[in-house]
Image 1: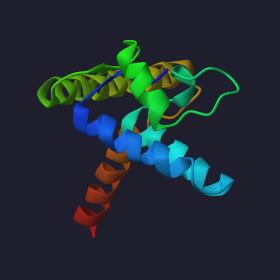
Image 2: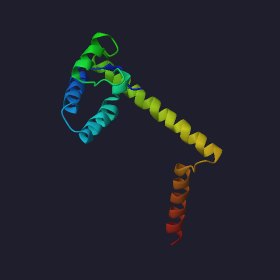
Image 3: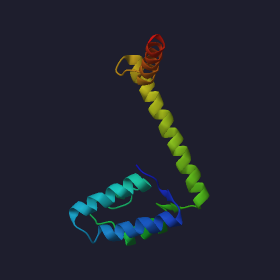
Length: 125
């Protein structure tokens, strides 16, 4: 699930991408959908009816029915920052759990040990 809160500027850009998506070939459509997901955390499947095309008109309908909320730029930026912090925290927790279970090497610790070894090696030369 992606976001459902966007700034007016983001909605305008998403609308342009949707308009473009509906006028290009399948390969380019995939690239545009990827851009929507990655750059805007916008998943068409969160808002469309299965089997129906989703374009700029459907985007505006989603806004009108309240499925998509438009908020001010500052609120959106704060929301994005919080999502980034949460994502980093969750990734660090996953990494730590994998290290503790032996599933993954603690690469940060390994790099520190390697750097210490390198420093000692150069001191002894």
